[in-house]
Image (cartoon, rainbow, N blue to C red):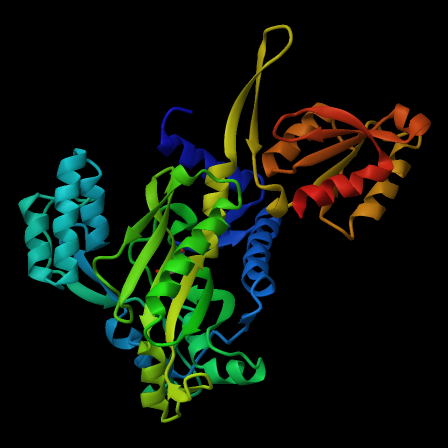
Amino acid sequence: MTTNENKFQAIISHAKEYGFVFQSSEIYDGLSAVYDYGPYGSELKKNIRDHWWKSMTQMHENIVGIDAAIFMHPLTWKASGHVDNFSDPMIDNRDSNKRYRVDHLIEGYAATLTESQSEEILGRMDRLLAAEDFSGLKLLIEEHKIKCGVSNTCNWTDVRQFNLMFSTQVGSIAEESDTIYLRPETAQGIFVNFLNVQKTARQKIPFGIAQTGKAFRNEIVARQFIFRMREFEQMEMQFFVRPGTQMEWYDYWKKARLEWHLSFGISRDKYRYHDHVKLAHYADAALDIEYEFPFGFKEVEGIHSRTDFDLKNHQLLSGKKQQYFDNELNQNYIPYVVETSIGLDRMFLLILSESYEEETLTKEDGSTDSRVVMHIPAKIAPVKLAILPLTKKDGLPDIAREIMDGCKSHFRCFYEEKDTIGKRYRRQDAVGTPFCITIDYQTKEDQTVTIRHRDSMLQERIHIDNIKSIVLDAIS
Ligand code: GAP
């Protein structure tokens, strides 16, 4: 494996071959930027989601969860600003008819330049985007003679805004009022339930509401596998605070969320903060937590100080007060909000990228062998323990089944009799199973099994009674 691009392609192939991620509707040649999660992928995704949920809700007494509907009243998206502002500047190439997000087009070009040239052009782009200067952006593209990757020409249209929301109809299709949107973020389900939750969960400010769920965006440039999808999942938390304290909480969540990432054992060097120059329509401060994917540093999570923008506008359009009475201040106010928003699919891709390794092994006789191993952190690994009887006979499967029955209600186990032990170990390495145990003839005599550790490949004999606690210790 020489280049990062090769590594990324290898990860995509591996994800398919071992049942992590499939292209959606593959038998019909797929649907662009939509993916399905397979047997190991859906377990891993669920484990990441559960881990986030637990760290947000169970570990914070003042954060509670909800599960709001995907469909919401259309005025929600007017109030949130998505109808008017949720758009990206796009440009079309007249020869290929291919449409590009302007920032992606310029970023792609900048990646081919030296570091200082790249910084210069990206800095200029950021300033033009912040000023919404579309003719300036077009000029920048023309000055640098940036070409379309398909037609190889510079025959560009003007830069225009395109809304990213998917719309659909409820009821009669004739009436315009029946147009509703697939939510482009889960956050609004939290905002419109702010008072319901505050009252029923008897929360006092500062407190948070967490939610995970699907979001939909008509991304024009869909690429990089599950990094940018049209249907994806978010894990969001809105933290409601006293006006004026939002920057303290912004700093708090900026640090806390990075700590969460590092708790997977990932090196700090793989992360960086990126402060936004162009702020979203709702924010007074915003940053991305970026991770170094095989294709470079990219956003995995956003921390946004959303002011009182959302609640204030929902109050305006619904005519219902969205105020909180602060006993300590003896005062009513609309709370300010600090949001943490992470893409579950992006976190999944991060874990795949971080875990994937093609390892060359030197044997005792000096010859070499290789394996692909997924160093997925044990606590989120799809399968925690593989139970492998050495042979299919002589009562070994019976002992193995007994171990399986004792463990499977505590964590996800996998049972297999077929093939040599070596082949079975390799398959478990490829899906990231942290522990394998082998039941052999000695087991019948002294009740011990061989436990094999995925990362070190070390093997040791342990008593059957200790299997469960060893695995539970590693995943807790
Ligand atoms: N509520 C705020 C919000 O939605 P965002 O920065 O647009 O902010 C938050 O999205 C996170 O959602 C991103 O950091 C990213 O991880 C994920 N995300 C956004 N668009 C995505 C897409 N098209 N495909 C996959 N994940 C996406």
